[in-house]
Image 1 (tube, helix red, strand yellow):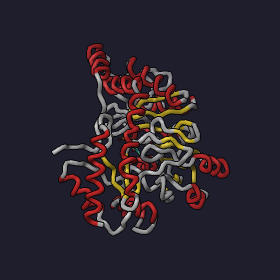
Image 2 (image 1 turned 45 degrees about the horizontal axis):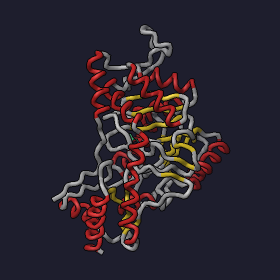
Image 3 (image 1 turned 90 degrees about the vertical axis):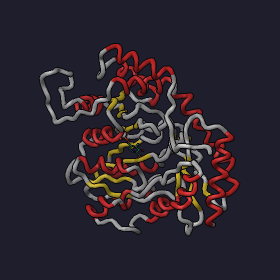
Image 4 (image 1 turned 180 degrees about the horizontal axis):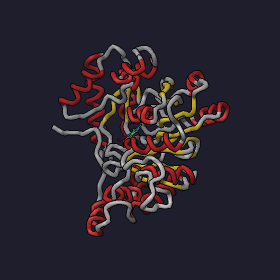
Length: 372
Ligand SMILES: *Cc1c(COP(=O)(O)O)cnc(C)c1O
């Protein structure tokens, strides 16, 4: 039986060589590889600065602090995301206010953002979900109208564009993440990008125990954290960003899924890319059309046949922690909930070939048909 994991990193000799160079150098943190990685990454995004950190979650936390968000503030975000995006708002003592999503792209719905604004709203944490940017023009307009900051959680959308402009260049800061299931990896790791020098300096200090920005050893002039990226991770990141065009190009395996699954539109809804977006496919997520089908049974069937899938994504407001803390209940964000109950991410990684995708697609169709 063939076995397909849901995701897998793409590691070459270059990553191994760079990591070995680091190990041989004796400098295992804050070294030259990190500096080169940050410079290349900022250049790729088209931002002035990049600050590498230990994870995407750490990056979001620092982006929130740097935006001056704190207790009493509200930040509007999507319930259809990885839990880290809403958690980052809680880390700084602010309150996440959810706005429901667009049923086709699964990104936050700008109209629902506007309705969620109160006197306390300070910022919008925009998540570009699955590899596709959110509707930035109306979101920017709302932000200007109500004087709100925009922070982008671009963790899933490296290299994606909205009307030709790169995800990660719309907010005062944006965060990317490099867990092994993202478009590029560093093992654990993340980066904050910004073109604002003050925010950049602040993030560099905050990741390094609040050390004074001139990097003097002796003064810690604010409460900081140890959110540094280690130099081995930075070495992997450097090799990956040097190969980023290839890594992103290879994600066009999504086209094969589309080829094999789109003809079964009665059973399965394939991902919808807005015409003014480019999609970089962190994951390939399909939706089972018949709402009476138990998605988890379909996943189990596929698992038994060696095909790993993921229930992407559960709605954050229905996690028990969020329910008990804020009193959320089913029905609060119905579009997000409906999507959460019926979507699954199919195996997706560089190295899958057309026959693999054909094989997996057929198994998916058969599994859905079985319960239809
Ligand atoms: C991956 C991810 C993060 C952060 O992930 P880390 O595991 O902390 O690097 C944040 N938000 C979203 C939407 C993500 O997909």
